[in-house]
Length: 330
Image (cartoon, rainbow, N blue to C red; front, side):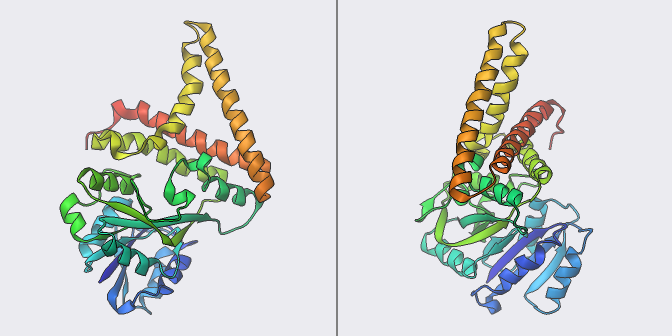
């Protein structure tokens, strides 16, 4: 049996699309259970899920008073019956062959975890949201993350979005780390790799992540991601819990701030901040202009989307770094 687990919290705008894509799967429904683990939503999410559970006996809803993803996944795994576990995200929809391709690949490849490319889309198509969508799929925006930038062959990788595991993987490597508000999937995958496991991404299917559509929501999400990059390393005591690409925005922010802070000792240091800003601006302008022309996207919104993504992520990492002396021991 395949057990599909989806943590949810206040997903009323997205949850129906997610469930409809689950119902459209070509995977046999008599060999499937779908568990939504709700963090006590305060919008209509629970009511919407209840409409589906009333019609489809293989779908059920359980509670997650802890609200965050790691306890939700652990509760779902422990409540599940399948010999294969798959994680979904409610902000996403899934190609109709997503379940069948990943389950087959899991066994054919002898992998401990498999995943697929995660395309980015938006619910409402406007010049601003289309620019945000592009930035979240572009290497200048998200680095060398293969599951975002695309693949054309099976590859061994350091992480995949969400995941599909044999149940015994959790017996061998442990459940999700409940200390982590963010980066819990990456940390689990790094733990698997450190233990000699194998993680693969396959090109034969995909999911589509529905991105946040305002600059404030984009900034808030990436500020949290950046902050928890630092806190993930702090709590796990493993620098390789993440990849180098996760710390590039921090390096950029520090390249602007540190020379200015120390320029009172030696004023020419301030020139380093200026040079860093000039280099970034030239690169930003060049890439945004090319994307604007080739994909007919709004140049100004592209500029703003890249800046919001990079600065909020890097600033979050800096705040995480400065908060370390005040973090409780967990």
